[in-house]
Image 1 (cartoon, rainbow, N blue to C red):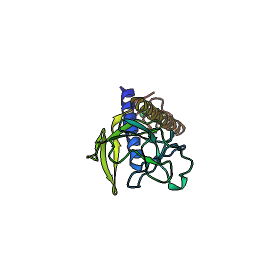
Image 2: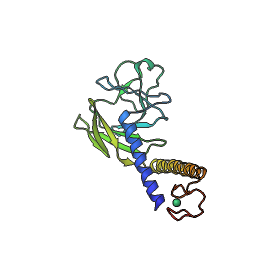
Image 3: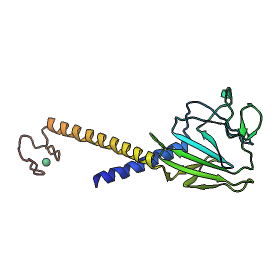
Image 4: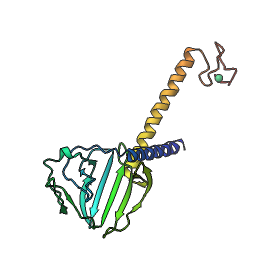
Length: 207
Ligand SMILES: [Zn+2]
């Protein structure tokens, strides 16, 4: 029972962490292998395997690789063209875009230490209305961020166990420190009553 409660608290903590990361859009990267520029010229992405967040795209049924971080224009060098093809839109030479009319699905994953929750954004062909699933859209200034709700089971269980473990260790530390302080002050170990040298605690009856 206590273990289940702890695990439940761990799940809540994992969700809180995933939503925080999604909200601040925390996406460090360990390198780049593909760039994507939107027709509006607003988005630049590169692949990366490290990081707290992760986006993957499928356009016209073709995976476009994974995009982990926005890359500043200054780093646009030596980036190989992605395998999925698409429409080249100018500089740098490697940048491409699947086309504004293409159908696409974007999956956002968030969590730490492992990614634990995902959300999905679908854009129909021909520039129709974008729909989101497994996520809650909230406004952050002028942009909209998607808080993920779809569990990624392996990551969620791992994160929940990790957070529950941290709680257990911190709890054990708290109890042992309190015991130590009480024993030094010659107080009752179980209730803290100042029992001096009386063997049985007059307050709670502990021996
Ligand atoms: Zn006592």
